[in-house]
Length: 171
Image (tube, rainbow, N blue to C red):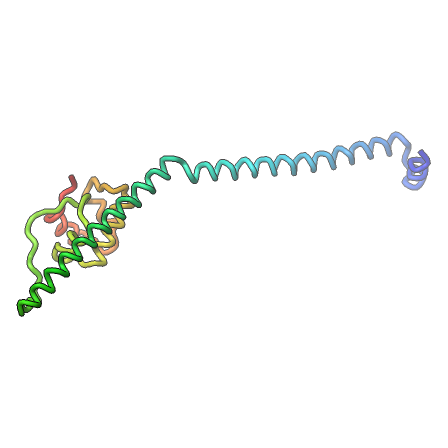
């Protein structure tokens, strides 16, 4: 108790005042510690919520479905490329010359099922546009419901949309 008496004399305070100040300072430190502890708990809880939200089962299933669709499309493209290559070498052996003109495509294609090669058969759709259309379709979950949605694709405006409507069906 000599410490309180010395402090009381130096600060010219009574023992009761020093005790009260000490208790208040103790509560202040305790409050700071509790506040910091609660904020750490909240941060941990938020991190756990974000991690669980990031990998929900539905999202994982949709990512797996997209990957399998892309794999199927790649297989179709490889098969079509091999067939085209065989046809090209056969015509070269016969001495036939390829015409520089592209055969005009007539008919319609189901856009939701079309491969990159099938899309390229449409006049005005090259490899880059076909890739953009396929990427667009996969971001829409593999199915496009309205023609107006095509306006989101880079390079498709009103004129191009009207042109594509002639060749696409959205079954």
